[in-house]
Image 1 (cartoon, one colour):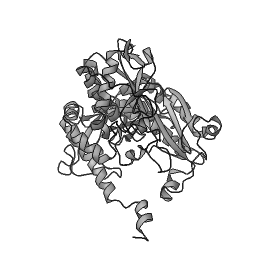
Image 2 (spheres, one colour):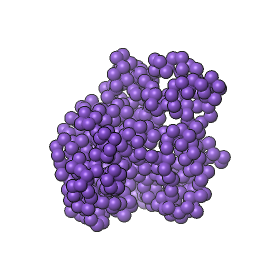
Image 3 (cartoon, rainbow, N blue to C red):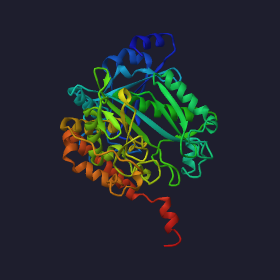
Image 4 (cartoon, rainbow, N blue to C red):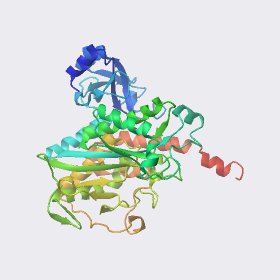
Length: 454
């Protein structure tokens, strides 16, 4: 939506609120609601501000010590939030509301704050452009739907919730019809909010579904990913009676995990640079395709924390679970961490490692940095794997815990080179604080196991 369109809607009384937002380290949308007239008179021209603690707070919004960019010693000042007008749109699912995403900048010189998720992706997209490439991407997001409201789920301590489905409904259209009050509303409102939708479908869990939106340039797609999650959650909350959804990577030990499969390709001069005639086993593609795939796979272990950023993320990686446990690439093989799909202009790499809890800006940045290193160095991918990757003991495993992944991330010279030492130190502290909080918590599993019998 152009600014002139917003002005007309405001004058007509059809929009009176503008949400100005950005994502924190978890990928949550943070920001403020502006009076629409104030937005047009002030914020559209000058931007606005937000407390710099928002890039250091934990899940409970508590300020976490130990960060350099914001702390008690510096007084927790402000960031400058600069609206990106290419992201401005109606938030159709909210009453008389528009939404715009921002870049996080230093309050003084308005330089991009390096540690902000959107800044990290911007840096890698600039690196791709230096090599003459645009990056196209798409996220496939899965989520569980429950008949309980968010408030009721919290009051039940998130236990014994009622899933929206009662049998595995992967691709079932009949069972899927029962949650159309949510999914159909999400498809409609996303489309009306300029997030083009492809499909929704039932998934391999009780009440589990997937919503896919059209691929786009990587920054625009990461923005769509964030808006999709916000839209689906808020629609669920607005239903009568209200429902809830979760994007946890692994909601329950006896349920399938929820993934975020990332599709990506490089483009040049409006065409897919992966298209070509070179042979990579059963795949025909360009040397650029092969090298990008090789780099993406080679650097997956040290970038793992950006694909799987929570303690819960690693519960997905179980054999026979549709989540990858080993690193290999294969043509159209859902047991592989890297699944190559499409051909010619649709040829792309699908990374099946990330879960639905991923921050898209960080995951996309990790993928691009890794793949571009392969292109620069002319890496050649390992041979295509054919068969059940779960049974291939000779293949390397994905890192299986946040602690292991964080150590690889923090100790990688490559990651420090491409992301910057300040970014690596910031996110290393973030991941280790998540681990510290987890280690200090007493779980239901522990109470069940030890309360009586220890």
